Amino acid sequence: MTTFGPALDTCHSGAVNDDDLALAVDVGGTTIKAELVDGAGTVLASEHLPTPMGHSARDAIAAVGRTLLAQRPDAPVVGAGVVVPGLVDRAAGIATYSANIGWRDLELVESLGAAWRLPVRIANDVASGGVAEHRVGAGVCTEDLVFVPIGTGIAASIVSGGRLVTGHRGETAEIGHLAVRTGVPCTCGQDGCLEAVASAAAIARRYTELSGDHVAGADDVAARLSTDAVAQRVWQDAVEALADGLGIVSLLVGPALFVMGGGLSRAGDGLVEPLQVALRERTPVVHPADVTASALGDRGGVVGAALLARDGWAPES
Image (cartoon, one colour):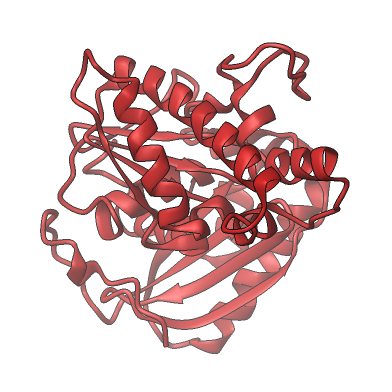
């Protein structure tokens, strides 16, 4: 059994019945991950399946939830948390837009609640990862942090004063589209976006272009850093661009900690140490934030979903 461990969170209190379960669902661009979790954070059952495109994703979400609930038919379940990519109208219970999955205005709360006979809450997946790292991950006891998952793109969720900060329509921070370099086109149509230089996809693409040697992803580039000059150049360029972007966020928000998530965080100190040095060089006006890797890895979204099911992230929202 896996435990994400509310016991790790010594800085947030609240009575939780360990016997009551929560259904947690993280809808990714390629995979739906779902878990039944007790109040102590122990994962009692889990399922995953491919994410269908468009509105048919809702049927897949409902099905994976039913499968898990059927495994514990007599156990009390307090509710369900479902986190999804893109824009979310939490109050209306609608996933308003996801470019990756191809839906618009997808109603979730009412239909999933009827399918599971549970109260359902929905939220954005990047926000979920940020809340999870704040509550039970790398940011425990840190009231001001920014969670930055780096994968195909780059986004961020901001926790300030212990509260999740979102835009007026529930948006997380799209820092991947901060302009940090000129002459580098981005798929969004702008020039010089951070994710066009420093996302995992961009790192792999640029290494292949410069070396002529195809790599499957940024992990392959990181593995060559000790011996490959092209890998070192591409990696350093990405780190410098990331530091430029995080430096802007530091001036705007003043976090104490950046938690790096997503696939790129698997590089560990290979990412964190040079990024910390580069960020300090760019923040002479504000106190430089510390940089660390995610403690929850790719489980951050589903861990946050379990917390969402229990209290709606009440201390943060």
